[in-house]
Image 1 (cartoon, rainbow, N blue to C red):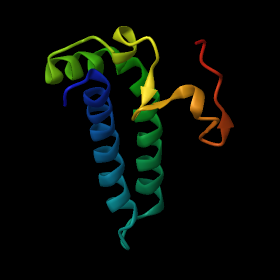
Image 2: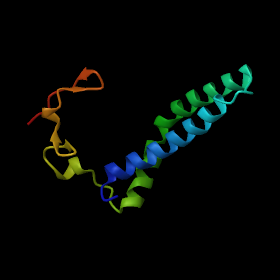
Image 3: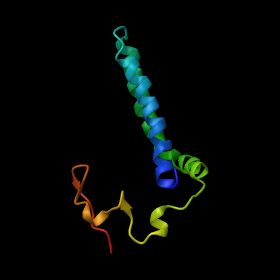
Image 4: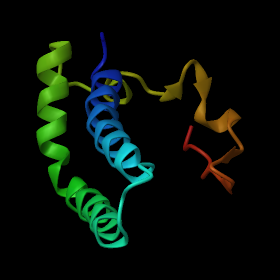
Length: 102
């Protein structure tokens, strides 16, 4: 992982996917009762709600992992995603992307 952006996404998604995977396995059990299932879903909701406040922690972990705390957009005048300029990406997640100031 040579950039903080990649390391940050790996750190974030690792924790998110591990939590959802373990909950999903329990929810798919044919012996689970309604009360524990509801508790699991509330737990996931709480986990995601608290997740936003932990950004600095994940950013620190990512910086330690890749050896840099400088974002690519801080050193590059034109941020890109996999070499595609943001200006060239008209839609993202079903909504228009704001044009970049170039």
